[in-house]
Image (cartoon, rainbow over all chains, first blue to last red; front, side, top):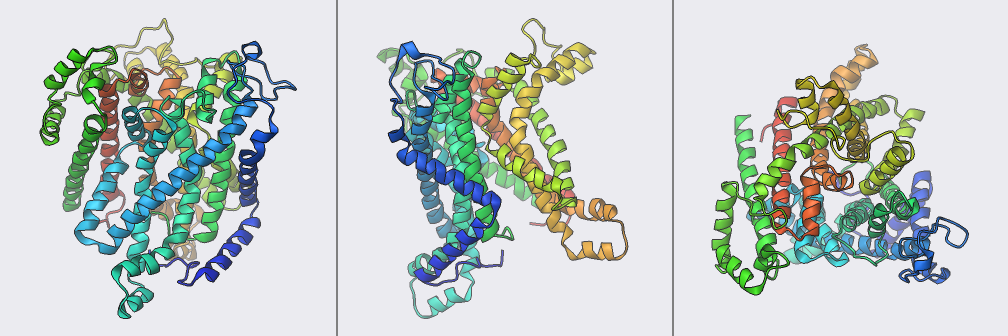
Length: 297
Length: 334
């Protein structure tokens, strides 16, 4: 773990911007990365303007139009309440991005604070904090989330909290190990020598250098947290009907699987698309920023 | 080596204590009114009050925690709201089904994932190597709940190849309960037909549970073997004139096995969670489906019972992995 992150030398904003440009350039050269980028940007576009393009209401119940198989008016069919499946998928895109952004930023924030404190101060503080992450990591992921959202009452909000509860220890461990190896670098000693406070050293000098490993982890995790939240919704512990959330839609489709296969199939494909998009992108970002696999904890 | 194992055991005990504090907090401190929960949805206010006193929920949290621990150590996981039976009895009844499913999926993951990873590493940059990469990126992204439904639709409804769910057909009696793992019991009692039937029922759920994991295992095996193959001593072995085959399988595979072992432990832990979803789709009578039903009834003791048992199992499998390290890599000292 001796290598320090090569990209993020302790420079100001200018250095980072050119690093970002280099990252984009390297990504564009890889076909898989490009595929991922196109998928995610495409879905983002759908999330932003899609609802304006469809003429159906995602939640309007029209009993006369139940279970219509995919046709010209309803390219992906209608569900058991006569709602247009494609419209609901389009609205669901927003929820998926929301889920990814909320969970990833929440876990990164909590993980960074706890990991930084543990790594920087060491000793007893480190020992206690790491045993706490051990405990959280000992639960099978869905099981802890399941227990927590059963108690908190099922909703999309509690599902996101529950998944965050399972996810932060990974971020904490990553930041801890990066901080521990950065602590011994020359520039940290130099900062200490000119009299910078410990607080300032940690937040101004060390943490900015943990940014690229964190970015790698965040991009790898975006797809996984969407998958985890959709799984909770599927078993009834996340978003509740009639929310057009993809996991809920697959659960609705499950009941009518043999009569209306399209109800479960298409929302599921949407999940596959966004998760694979994020995975391709995350994989490529890792290849570019971390070719040696140093950031893996 | 013994010092390492002792230290590892001590750590396990600390973690187990932490887990009970968490489950205690989830079931007793987070709900606004745990007695209300425990009494079930139909209970009146007097019943709730009575239960609150019976369960000691009117006492300070620390006292409650000690009572909670006392009950746990006696194997008392509370009474299920839905089945009105002790949760421990329910869980013991359903656990073998879960164990059988998870073990079969785990074996599939290892016997498919590891060899294909080795193959991809040996033939690095070949067409086959490239072909493992894209499908594994997709396979990791497949939601198991969706995969299960698609499997049911195609292989049961459309082509009638496999049963829709359950451990055995509706009219088949279970084999004599020896280990309560049907594959083993049916073999031990010589009921070949039941063995095949069990196997048929296992194919879909186990594949659902294993598919993404096989992909992860393949990628990881490939990466760790490639890393070892770049080491100096491997080059030395090649320079001595040993065959490629001998170098790969005799010199490189064992050191590459350490991260693979870690990953095996993690995948096993992952399956203990994934089984909840798979069991609920395939009407598999294990603890996962029990938990799924319990969620619908707001049956908190049952959910927490399953949480504890599955977590305990994961902790034990992690422990097993750490002990196995010593055997794979005698250099490990802590």
